[in-house]
Amino acid sequence: MRHTQLGILLALLLLTAPELSAESAGDRAALSAYLNRALSAQDGFEDRYAAEVWLVDMQQRLARFLADPAERLDLLRRVHQQASELNLPPELVLSVIEVESAFDRYAISRVGAQGLMQVMPFWKDEIGRGDDNLTDTPTNLRYGCHILRFYLDREDQNLNHALAAYNGSSGNLRYPNKVRAAWESHWRTAPLDW
Image (cartoon, rainbow, N blue to C red):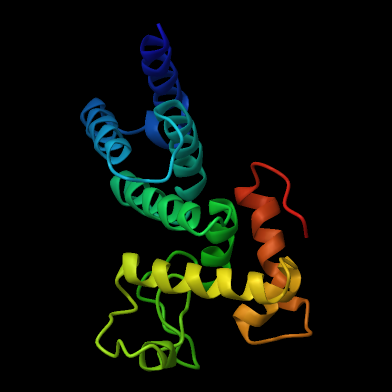
């Protein structure tokens, strides 16, 4: 019974999503198959239903930044897995990525920060992994999420202070306010203690 409900829910969400309804039936089928494969991978979800609901919801939100449905789902699965591993809200990580790079994995800032989460290259040398590629999505997410987790722990879970430290602007609320605005506008699913 529950499996049938999941299929119906997924079908309804895929057919009613404006971004997806304009796609061909073949694209929808490919997206559905991709979603099925993504859900079978280790991704930090408690169950398949939660995974389907979150992925379908978030991929619609992400469509404004990434056109390719398979790319969206792959990124979302990776974000969820890495964030969950470190006890970070995946929606917070998505907010940071929006502010840092607007989901451009090849973004490089004027000070040299790289990738989705705009990780500074000095971190590679700091931990003795000079050959790591910060534009590689899994590598960038691993670095960025670990750095964010470190600052959250250091700042006694104070999100504003941790985000300011992540940005290198401790004591200034400009960056945390940008992340919060992105979270409120695009990614919010549950309350965060700001």
